[in-house]
Image (tube, rainbow, N blue to C red; front, side, top):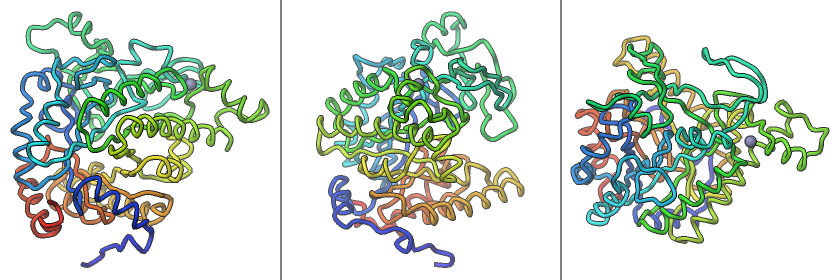
Length: 433
Ligand SMILES: [Zn+2]
């Protein structure tokens, strides 16, 4: 095929790990679709618990996936708001429904595997009820209009999601249910593609990865892996907040840093500090891996990775060391969303932006894919792009084990037709079943 990339020129896979991967998922090729139950029926710019509670039709979703030959559902069981959509004794479930349990039952009936996506450090609800566990700014600054001061917690207005009050419910009553709601309202859709929501603005928090928040996450993980037939457990937001460079400077982190690197090592801008960040995230990954495997050794672990420049993004901001993390967890999942940055459907200019990012994401993977020490399953977007762009990404970022697509709500009718055809003609049904 014209312009095709042969990824095996850039990255060598271990045949034993690949066969284990295929055995774990009972298929040659993964064909995954993501679903975010708390973000309503369109796109992902809303936070809508009422939809998840009353309208989300699990059987309808699973029938549609089966019809389109999807063999893995990536279910976001904990999103950045912090809601836990299963029968939980540990977490907060505002949907009053065991959505994960319903999907697991329906998956067993249809031989669709359930992979859960579990947002880790970004947690609006925990930030509201445990401000002492939120990460702390190490300097004073300004970012996209947000002012913050040294020593303050990193709880800020959410950039992406907005909330509508359910009919007949007053703000003050809804705030009791959703404590991270603010009285501020966005009446117009934002101009930037990242700020397209309308409605009440919630806050969001990145929690300190050296706080008790980690124990809370591990308790939730144990509960899910023990009580549900999930084939795989993937950690999302297994990182620091990428928007700021000065997190986390709480007393816990500073003390640990000084203990490990000595009092001479510099906070914030030194290679010791960046090492400390990536070690902190890797420590969480190791704890997660231990809990998952001790609870169910057949459950595959994984993590979502943000592509981008190694030094400026992965090391300095996120604390994601691809080699370390992929040596600990079973599968790495880079999020390849170039056409989320711009689509031809929004006009010529945005089409060019999307193409530019497609080129950049490809180049970034060519440069960095060798850093991975595990099988790779990429996820790419259907939401907010057209069929042609979607297929282009799916072909490009299949690293040999299949592809996952983000996400169910927001995929157009034309894209569903294209997805079915792709399964039948390009992957081959014999590889999917
Ligand atoms: Zn901290």
